Image: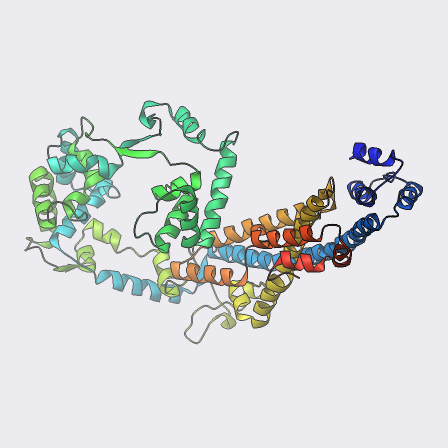
Length: 577
């Protein structure tokens, strides 16, 4: 810019366009040096000398256009600064309510981890109800057999009858011969390996080298931490935006979603991925930026499998738990054939406890079986604090902190049924989502802030910056971008707000129905601040470009460029200031 200005200043005679461009370059120079001590691009005397050489009508009109632009650009810049300040003020108002919702949710989550307080009488009544409900469950003979066996395998090792223990120990050396069981072993136990696109296999590489190979396929120069953070944030964003946004992102990247995938399926998959689990293949490919490594189940089962191994990993293939190639009745017959001594030992235990077995029908309750001394059913009849809390809250809320029995409660803490009640609502002073949704005035205020203040201010700022690009190009203003409003802070704030909003939505906890309801409330009350939606449309940009180009350095330009508000309004589109 200095060279071009020097060329103009060193001339003896100037055109109106040259003086006008010099005038606007001085404005650019002052904008670049804003808040810094600096000399003007040229002195007032030098400008006067150049102006005095303009005497032809065409040159005077051209210079008048640039003078008009100079004044209108200064006016527009000052106005847009006001729009930006409006954005900042309303951003802090809007984000304050997000902070309140986050604080309330954090406090609620903290309360869920505290012990649930109740009286001894209240506890006893609830425990009795839980036990009564469980005790009414009825069991078939095959269910009793497999429930008992499963108990002896894991929790009841020390309570195994000698004959059952001896039969179990014998299976440690007996090879598996059942072809149906062997055919399903790799599938049921997740026995397999991953491959990358180039054929490298996870089972043929040390773990560290495999991890490095897996992640080096993503963004160049991106660390594993950066990749995981980007992956996590985008997962939160898609979880917030829902199935349509997921479909759009997949279409853009040429990824096919499975036929029939519902929004509930997609949400469940993304939630699993946020927990560090593997999600559906299509979503893994979408989030990771490339196709996730492909899983292959081994075609042959491992050598040396024993019947003891199968009891731990595939008992459901005998008990009817798995829908299989054969019926549950046939599965049970295979169990008797594959484990004759174990079956005989368990049947003997049952005969000793409940008498000779009868045909396979529902004939005993859990309570009866526990009273008859079957350890597995004594364990099933045990009442846990979680079950008591679930019954008391009727599944409407999750609590994880166990139960505390209050000693000598005051009357003020008891209702007319003798149940403990809190007299202080800890959440009352917090404006959580439920309270926000019930406050109509607040709901209206949030809509007003977003749609009538925050978003219009943002659209107007970006409209102004786009207009600077158009004018700079049309009138050959070198370095015109210096006249733009700096939007870095706006964009940082918007990005931070969105990340917090998406994470609050994704991290909602509690029963599914309650979580779904709170997420719906959050999406209704607070909207992401999307910079891309504040940008002028291509059609509006082309329209304004055409208008400016047509004006050129004409007398009409001199008149129309005195005020840039109309051009900014066109670029801001619907919803601008």
